Image (cartoon, rainbow, N blue to C red; front, side):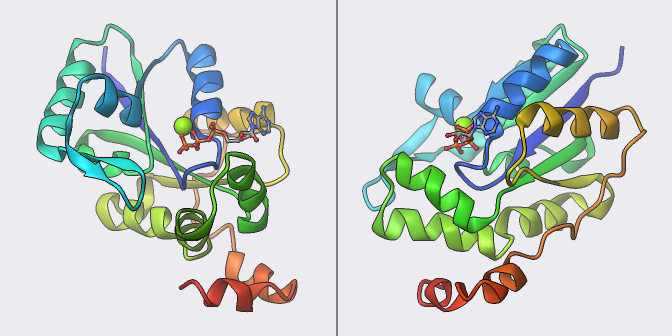
Length: 196
Ligand SMILES: Nc1ncnc2c1ncn2[C@@H]1O[C@H](COP(=O)(O)OP(=O)(O)OP(=O)(O)O)[C@@H](O)[C@H]1O
Ligand SMILES: [Mg+2]
């Protein structure tokens, strides 16, 4: 049985954890939550006080993820995290789903979590500038990278779209969002540019 490694990435707050749990239960897949693994197995080199987050030890982390994949008995393995693509050899990745959420909607999610100031704006700007998408395409090439817009959508429907792509019925595409264009049309771009 050939294993399929499916990466689910995107800016913090887009919905990776929620969507991957739903997808995993439909596919009967294993989930590797990168951030959780870093903390649980202390796979970090230090703590970034400014960003309030652990600095992952990417060498040890990549090796650990490789062995978890190897030892999994499931066909599908979801690797979930905003820098998950960096941790796997591109040829081992079947598909990369980059979840996208319009920055103003993301802002509401992150503010509800209590993010503010630099931590809030770093994430909003990263989403507005397609950082995760560009990194994924840069590392894996366009063919495997599928952009999925979750803005205003029920995650059930998002998961159905992902399944249709995995089954070869749906289109795996990039370039489906234009956050800068939409922010400009809504008169919100200037506020974002201040934080670029
Ligand atoms: N079924 C759903 N339909 C629509 N929105 C949802 C649903 N479930 C959760 N959400 C929204 O998505 C938000 C973010 O979800 P989630 O924690 O999965 O994001 P994440 O990408 O894993 O974030 P992080 O990178 O910080 O782990 C939730 O706070 C909630 O507002
Ligand atoms: Mg999460």
